[in-house]
Length: 132
Image (cartoon, rainbow, N blue to C red):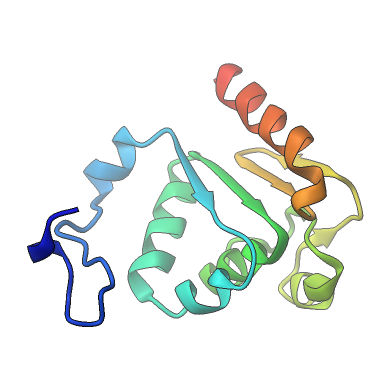
């Protein structure tokens, strides 16, 4: 990364924003788990990107706490999903049809509960991309 691409807090700054045209070129959107989702869901650009990718039917992969981002984007109502049990109530309250399974695929959404599910999650994402 070039020095000029960093701000004084040593965080990366994006030089471009996504557009509808850019979304069309993307095949998938991985949403990280852990506690990062609690921070990134506060960025309206992230929520716009998630909504655009969903509207375009692009694959959205998410695991663990990443469901928080999709909740904030408002795209889980009526969709099957899983997550870490710690955000199960949040998922249900957002209208998700929550289930305790290692892998849940609902259309363009591919998701898993925790890092223990990574092998099945990775295979599920690859299989879903291959089927498109």
